[in-house]
Length: 147
Figure 1: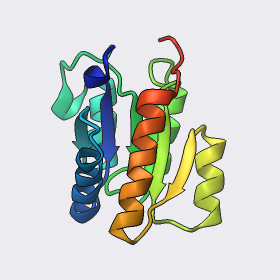
Figure 2 (figure 1 turned 90 degrees about the vertical axis):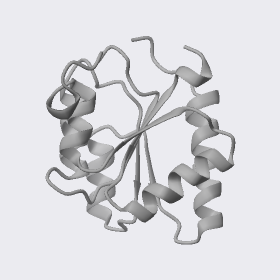
Figure 3 (figure 1 turned 30 degrees about the horizontal axis):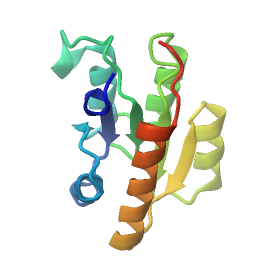
Figure 4 (figure 1 turned 135 degrees about the horizontal axis):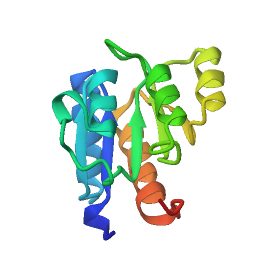
């Protein structure tokens, strides 16, 4: 899989945070395909080829999922739980990217097997730098498990 074939699944319901994340990725020359899911149902539909993504080739998995926790319909903790319970998705790297500072959210995320937990910086420059580092690490440096 070449760099351009690596998909990022951004699960984010806040249009401003979605736009900032996409802008930060593009600004930092991360040209990977970005698929956006705006709630937990859309994220699970994408991963399992159901609902609005019925028929999608689910053998093509994201290189990394950037997962917000505070989502409509199905929250991020439940999305993570379902991803980790399924053999087809349990090894896909999940980075929780959230504004939540609740300790329980962090404990739940790590207990369910997230690979990293990052609080979104409020400032765009800091947010852009965090996204740049995420992209560099997960898309270029990290060696994913063979699937």
